[in-house]
Length: 201
Image (cartoon, rainbow, N blue to C red; front, side, top):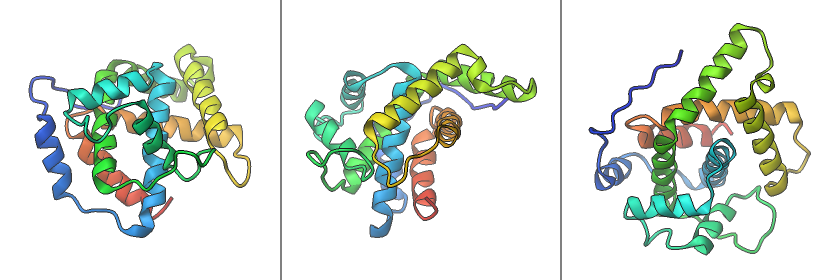
């Protein structure tokens, strides 16, 4: 089983987490579109798995003292619409480094809050592999995969239609990633993953 250390008492403060991210490299200009897409997909996976919505994301912004970056639903929608593969042009805007850091901290805060269900999903995925069963045959995973695929198809606009198999693989990969983002230091892991994958996406 994947083991991820968990500690509520020793979690760094929001200010310390922000300072952590400031010390890490900034993305280059070319990487931005990929980074915006990746952050939005991780949030989409959290929505699909846990049923959370914009209210929980705004509450996380409040918990982390990030209201100035994400003050309301419209601001949150605009930030997520900066993902270049999202449908609709109305809210698209440039995402700056501070806004990207804010979304990373919000994502990891929500992942920590929902670590139990994330861990359960990953455990079931490992059981499916061990028993040579389809992940869909487990209720939690089946519901998650269906919700992820539905959200993706509703919100994203690809040049070519992505297959259900490819979407399922993407959903399961992001689920495993979420387990690591829910751990202490998850914000650093996510930021570094964004930088790394932006050159390979």
